[in-house]
Amino acid sequence: MSYRTLKQVINAQPTSDGDGVKINRIAGGKLARQLDPFLLIDEIRSEDGADYIGGFPPHPHRGFETITYMLEGAMRHRDHMGNEGVIEGGDVQWMTAGRGVIHSEMPEQTDGLLPGFQVWLNLAATEKMQSARYQEYRDEQLPVLLLTGGGQLKLIAGSAQLGSEQHSSPITSGITQANYFDLQLTAGEQFELPVDAAQTVLVLVYQGATSELSSQQLGVYAQGDVLSISASNQGARALLLTGTPLAEPIKQYGPFVMNTSEQIEQAIRDYNNGQLVG
Image (cartoon, rainbow, N blue to C red; front, side):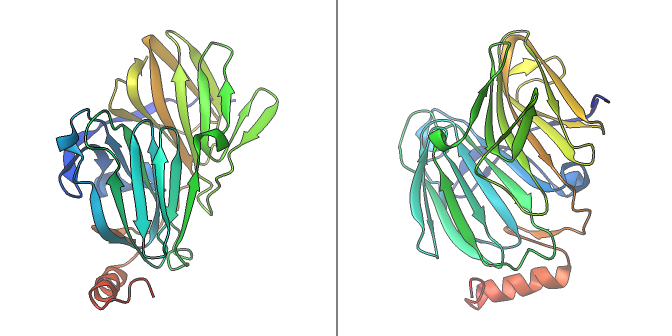
């Protein structure tokens, strides 16, 4: 048994996207190797409707998956396939853009707190041109595991072993075998989780702090088969992300993520010619 050690700390950067929505973002070309198979982590957190009311009007994607997780508030999804739905506190939407999708995500409120996350998960070269699909999961469909120290672990995607028991979310990914958990720890609580030694392990603290990370900091952990996290005296809430690195070339142009420049150029042509979604 070998414990993972903290290898790198990345600070989320304030920026805006969509129609002026204010977000905290962790992404960028230089981080691709450290985050692989993840591409981007965005956090929305504001009590001011002016920060998010513009939402994310219709826009395209190709070559990856988006995972939207709401803590509170409500967001409406619409796409070219005819899918439409509202996710609220604790709900998740998982969209596989594959060959192409055009969708919008618009807040269902004009004021009040709107906290949530969107994670971009890369697709392997062999999966990038698959048919698009959309899935929605309610809060009550996702397992919440109570920890002995008083905290809890919510399984958004993948599976986790606690003690002798294996627990699984109804959401699974493909080649990347991604796990996506929401961890809540009480003051001073320590948590250990067995992890695949070959996978990338990321921890994004979004409330409180751990012994190593403050809020809005992402920790990238070195190899090992156990992740250990200790909460500060404030307690901590954090997203835990693990996934099998694809170790493939990444070419990104805005909403398109492919493997070569030629594929990006084709995606742009397809979008401009009205052929992105087939």
